[in-house]
Amino acid sequence: MLRKPRIKREEAELDITSFMNLMIVLVPVLLMMMVFSHITVLDLKLPDLADPAQQTEQNDEEIKNLEIMVRQDAIEVYYPQSYLLKYIPSTEEGYDYDTLVATLKQVKQLLAKQGIEKRDLSLLLEPDIEYQTIVTLMDKARSYKAVVVASVVDAELFPDISLGDAPTLKNPEAISQGVAAAGGSE
Image (tube, rainbow, N blue to C red):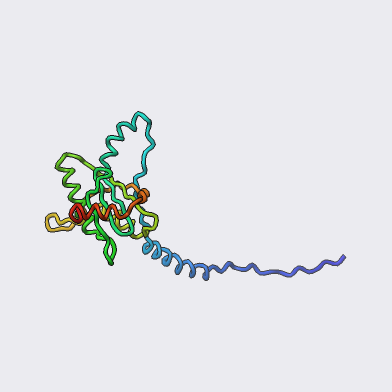
């Protein structure tokens, strides 16, 4: 029997310089991407599940709901529930957020004078309202810019926001006629 001579193989060294170069470039790039891509989460208040005994107590409280109903052509502010407080028609530029904030500030001041600490409101939306409009409405309803001792701070309005569907109008002209009969936007 003849033996085959073995070919001696040299041990190859593991060359990781190219991998290290990749990591040196990749890690800082990924860290920079994390800084530039912030994810913002908006808090929503979901309705609680209640016992029938607690519902009677809540029914009295629900009558005093503050509602902002957003339609394609206007924003309507209701307080107490089903009582139209302010009708804010939209313009060519879009919704009038400044009037909405002024109305919400008036409601907050009125409630504070009555000794009521209200932090929640319901945002009722028609199906075709744009996402950016919803986010802007939520931001405007949560707080407003106020000047306190020569510095601008965010003053709280109604931070607990619930979302819902706006009821459909059976007679859309009735609201505009009711607003005109009431003397404008009151």
